[in-house]
Image (cartoon, rainbow, N blue to C red; front, side, top):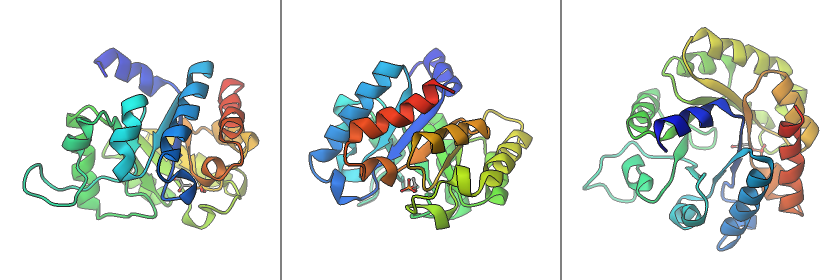
Length: 233
Ligand SMILES: O=C(CO)COP(=O)(O)O
């Protein structure tokens, strides 16, 4: 992305679908889900990013421009084995990454290094946090996004925006206090358009969702329902 495009990107809402390792997205199904996301994104002029499993990143990124890794390792370019690193995935057209997801936590010094590395590579960084105090700590690193996800609501079908609205409003404040360009996303338990609308009403710039889309019977219909919440906000 050139500079102007990066700015446009950061000014718009963001809808990230984390495929995790659900069986529903195994093999060629990841590319199919990414294609549905791209179709709805285009229809509504909305930023929808997909995070397929690591081994499918390059394949999905061949046909979709908005692909982030679910995790990256802070290992060096060169003689390192079995790690997935920013410089190399960038060359397969991966545009960003989740860092420190609740299901793949890493030490704070690695979070700091990865945010810097992604910035230098002009890739988008999304630092996942579990509570408001972590939102404040990591917002000060100025990642592109902080994604707040209370771990107990992940995969529960009970939306953070309805169960714990205060965690979103407090995180918005924490991120603002850092006084930089970082923006807040939220996730955990989001399964409907009204969950999305509520998250946006509370001040989130977008959402990070997994099972609500991946496990839906009809992917396109579910993505469309979420997308409409962004369009109608
Ligand atoms: O962990 C999450 C996204 O990264 C949230 O998962 P669910 O949408 O399944 O609750």
